[in-house]
Length: 297
Image 1 (cartoon, rainbow, N blue to C red):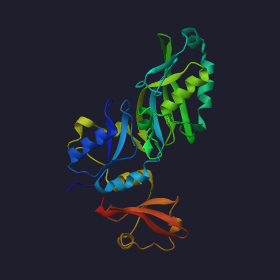
Image 2: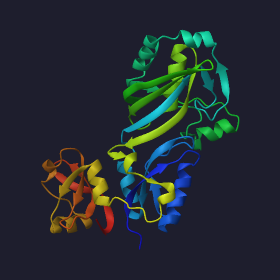
Image 3: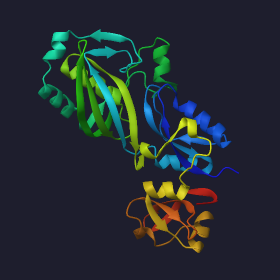
Image 4: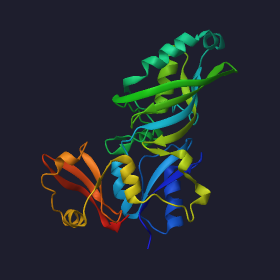
């Protein structure tokens, strides 16, 4: 029997997120594997996977903030806003050299905080039921609507110049749904020289770090986080009695206990350390928003 758990995987470049899911299914001998957000094939870094019943927890992880280490190339624009696309514009080398550090700083500042961002046309966003990138590949013109995102950190770590372009290595902390290649595109456009993403590595998803992730070649026998351990990293932990656990598993409410939650959701853990499920506050009471199948730790 496959134990449910959360698996952290360090995805290499060249593989799709689905490739990693497929390998995980084979390694663990189960079809029930899901993820809490994909990475493009070019990108590397942290994928958060759910196995068996722990896939139910992914809903509470998808919206977590994320951290990326990226390289932005100023001076060129591409069809995909990243290195996988064709170059559509190459700025004059003198214009690229003329950009001052202050201009870059101001351009980054304008893309920091609560911003409105238009995702790349080749994103996985669905337009009338089809992925935007599928429509683009079919030759259609795709215009996506701007969406509100938050970029809480956008720091330049290093800069390199070569062959009429300037590469910026950057750290980005951002809300879920933020497209780093759109930041690269928009920074280049604001400077009037174009820009795209040449490297991307996701180092954090919520409380989970890539430093704790397993390589794809080491999936066989890889250790997972128990549902309780994973859920209590993301949400408040609420210890419940054996009687409370039984009632919750049977769909009963915990009356008059709403003040025990600091936020709207919490992870209920029974005396044996098993995750009962996710509780939500309903006025003065608590009810199960999700119950774990069986009694898993």
